[in-house]
Image 1 (cartoon, rainbow, N blue to C red):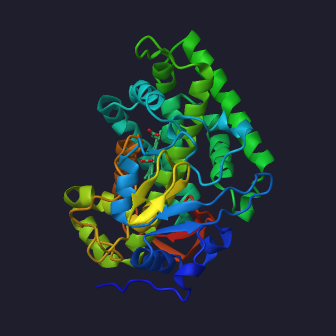
Image 2 (tube, rainbow, N blue to C red; image 1 turned 180 degrees about the horizontal axis):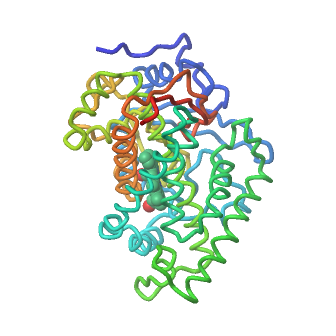
Amino acid sequence: MTPIPTTELSVDDIQLGQFETWARPDREGLFAKLRAERPVSFHEEGEFPGVPKGPGFWSAVRYEDVVRVSRDSETFISGKGSNIGDLPVELLEFFGSMINMDAPRHTKLRKLVNRGFTPRVITSLEETVRSTAHRIVRDVAPKGSCDFVEEIAAALPLKIICDMMGIPEEDNRRMFELSNIILGIGDPEFGVTIDSLMGAAIELSQYAQALGEARLASPKEDITSVLMSADVDGERLAPSEFASFFILLVVAGNETTRNAISHGMKALTDFPDQRAKWQADFEGISPTAIEEIVRWATPVIHFRRTATRDVELAGTKIREGEKVVVWYNSANRDERAFPDPYRFDVMRTPNDHVGYGGGGAHFCLGANLARREIKAMFDELFRTLPDIRIVGEPDKLFSAFIHGIKRMRAEWTPPR
Ligand code: HEM
């Protein structure tokens, strides 16, 4: 059995709200200790320039509690925000899409945007996903080495989401930069301030509104056209609602899948026996390998809810109005739910991980698309660059929200 990580800190000294915590090498140990000793704990919020310090938050770190909070969306709502800090009102308009809504508005909007994510739509994308993965790998193949994150992992989800939305090729790069700003908050490299966050949100929003209006006037074969003309109970998406949804999709669809692929490649390098198993029977093992990559990576570290009534969670009293944060990273390593959780096992069964959420109303809308992208990319890599491996240590994103890798060198023998 792979050992459970530890920490020198006592449980009282673990501060999940402080940015510094996320740079600690014993991050896994902190969560293992909380799971063992204090499954629901209270933390002060960190300070971010330009935003008043919030009242603090409860943390659920065990699998069972993360699932319970996620599935009880009457007691634990999203409408007061899904990030730990409360967004300034100016920003709520841009980030106010479905992830920050509750029923009945959430249900209606989700029904509407589902039109763009039906199994039929996703199946019809299959060929594009495959040919895009093929082109990305073919283009880097002769080089023998590259930055895996930008040139391989990020390129696929970016191109797919841009194609789905009808964003022309020449604007793809800008979408990449803007989503990096939005999710790079807290990492000094991106120097994100409230002003730059606002700037990125306004730029994306204006872009989306113009795109939505253009498709309303003359529809094309893209999801923007489907969404702009979709009608649920006589209601359509207003251009501003479309713009918020667009921001959510560009951000949610890019960074998450990119990090799943990057962490997956790193894990396959670190555990060559698992890689050999998968390479020997790609089709047969893919369904479990892809789930294990997402459990292992847990690209989204947490989301927040707010209690609508006094409630008890793992024996701790939570009061109406208090914030409750669900830590997917910790639930996905919970020894109560996953035997030998620190072992990367491409054949892990069962594997009901919470990488896409704990199974409630907000369960990831793009999960099936993400699964297809991860599969297509490893299929292409194993075929064209069968000895590709990561060299050196990844340069990690400094964030409590996205489990990100910024850069990571890959090497392989160029095909003849
Ligand atoms: C490996 C890749 C991905 C991971 C790990 C991931 C993870 C998540 C998580 C944890 C949530 C919140 C679930 C909850 O609160 O219960 C979520 C929601 C969401 N995701 Fe993903 N996601 C991924 C890929 C994608 C892609 C490719 C798209 C779109 C193209 C997407 C679109 C969304 C949307 C729209 C929501 C909000 C759903 C709602 O509020 O009803 N995601 N995702």
